[in-house]
Image 1: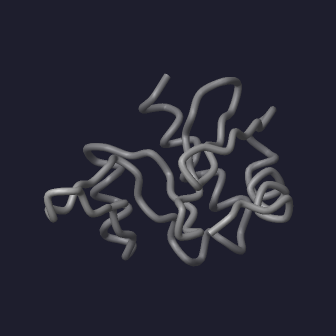
Image 2 (image 1 turned 180 degrees about the vertical axis):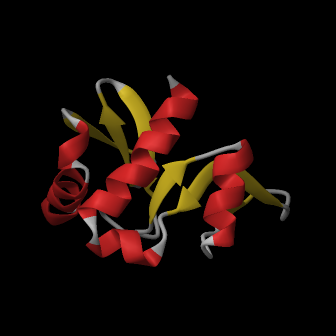
Length: 108
């Protein structure tokens, strides 16, 4: 998937209430930053994911979110600390920003 200008604008609009949102295309996806701190990505498959660990990862899993995974060259599956944003948050900027604030609080 190629990240489009529409994808970038969607992410900026969804998280606008957080403050200054910047983005950077990388590895077939998009990194999303607030005040220079990465808190989310759009993966190469087009899914929006937030950075999470510990209890936040548990909370996201309880909401039905899944962890970002990829196939390694040796055939094994690797994971990264990014979880899909819950479906209801994709249409609700207030809810999306709540998840993002929790992610930012873990990563600052």
